[in-house]
Length: 142
Image (cartoon, rainbow, N blue to C red; front, side, top):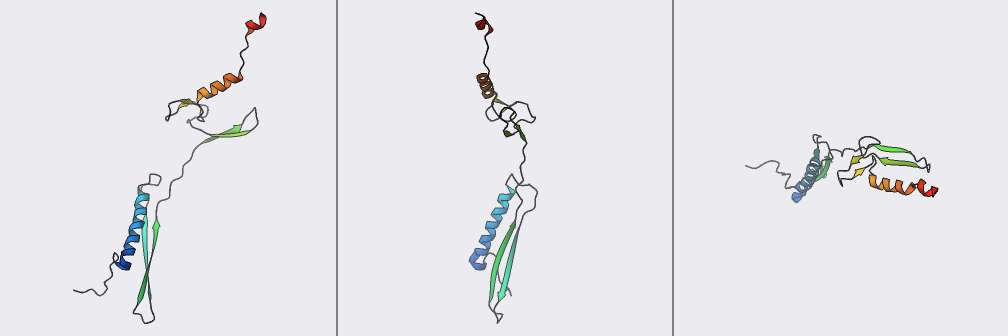
């Protein structure tokens, strides 16, 4: 039994159209497995086949075009604390690492106790110790 129209998508252009489709499907499935995209968002591949016959209507050029619709990567937000340093007057901005301004937290990466903006407490204590001078009142008397 012969077919009147015998065109197989997988065989057109020596398999190049099928190969291109496979590449676009890889993009779609990579996007589906990307944890930064919404899991249930719809994705799609559109194949456009365009037929251009010659003047005698006997030879037809078939061209293909592909478009892929994937889910967008979801944005990420954070909280930033900002203000002016009273000593220098400079504007400062630091990402809030703990969940509450002014609250210390234990960094899950290295286990150190840090300020709300991620500075280790021992670093701050050492800086403060350098700035403070202990006055020995006994020494001044004698």
